[in-house]
Image (cartoon, rainbow, N blue to C red; front, side):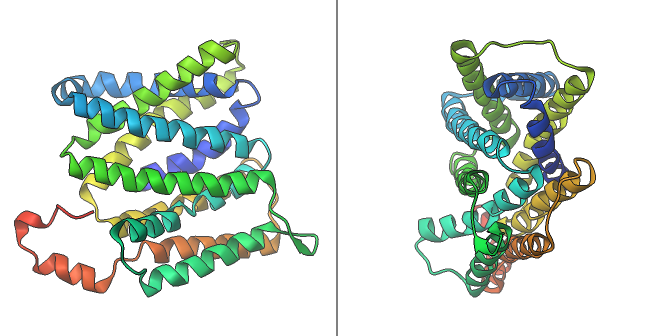
Amino acid sequence: MLVATFGWGLSFLLNKNLLNALEMNTLVTYRFAIGCAMLCAVFWKRLRQNTTPRMLLCGFFMGGLLYLDLFFTFLALESTDSGIAGVIMGSSILWTQLIQTVVQRRLPSPWIALAACLGFVGMGMLAWKGGRLEFTTGELLSLFTGFLSGIMVVSYNHLLHGNRLDATSLSIWECLWCGIIGFIGMSCFEHPSLQLAPMDWLSLVLLGVICSGVCFLCIGRAQANLDAGRVGILLALEPFFALLIGVLIAREHVALLGYLGCALILAAAALAGKPQRTRLHAQRTRPYAGENQGE
């Protein structure tokens, strides 16, 4: 999870820089071609053994959601800083818990209610400009992308455990289908090019190997082995890494009020991922055979 959160935090800056040299679908195609080539080379035997019609269908569904998530991420990065976009998209942890609350038809815990208040106050601080509240298009798109990411987390857990799928194979097919959709879009609407500067090639390789191949492998294995509370707390580090990389490397400017807003959003994400005490007690007293059948 730590590797995944750092890699995705880095991906905001790499994506923003590469959008100056590549069109969106071309970037998606190249990125996942590199990542999937690495994953398939390492896990080919495992992928072949676990590929079934159900795996293909679930992978296609997750790949489609991933493509939509990236599509709106790229739109957001065109009009806002990578660090700010990463922090607002970090609200996905809050959205994840709220979506689970609706799906499971239960009232939110006090932690979720507090996290919601802190998260929206923090986003208000980021949007406070010139003495008034003003969300830019990029910030609104970042918020919507966070919502899509929340849907992805809930859907992945449901498909993985509900269908007893192999997490590594599902992550690979998710990336493969996303790359295939990007390739179709590239072929129909764009003019792909391989004439990139050396630094662009370096960014593309890092984006494909670390931010795609390694990160999606790590998050899949993490969701198969960790409870939702720990995943939520660790995912809260993603916007922190995105902001830190944006400020230190890209020299992006964030006002003092914006830093306070970022701190509140990070606190909200950590609170939203806090396990409920009653739920943990139930897990400890549950028979061993059912301990891994929860979220």
